[in-house]
Image (cartoon, rainbow, N blue to C red; front, side, top):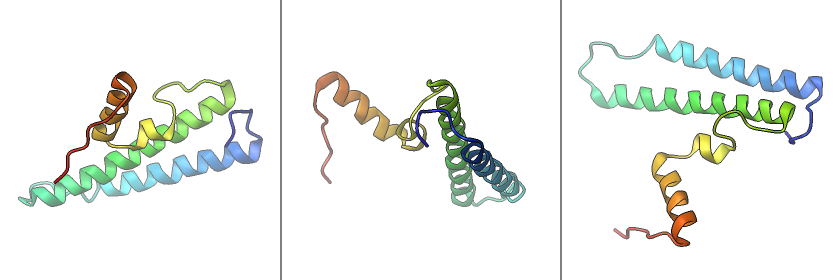
Length: 104
């Protein structure tokens, strides 16, 4: 979607994407392994839900930017969807001009 005013079809498609993602998040919340001792399963489920919530936030920001010309929160997909570690390297690169990468 461009940063120009979306047409009604584009807006409807974006809202449908948001709705379907939220419905999926809602279903996932019913299957959280409450009371189980499998911490890995719970952590995985939380990571999936967090990723989907960030996707919804990005889509909402995308729609807001298309309508107003300005994002209302984080802005682009990179800011919404990439890991905090990745975003920290972006910040480091913008302040130092280079990024150090650990080699295993």
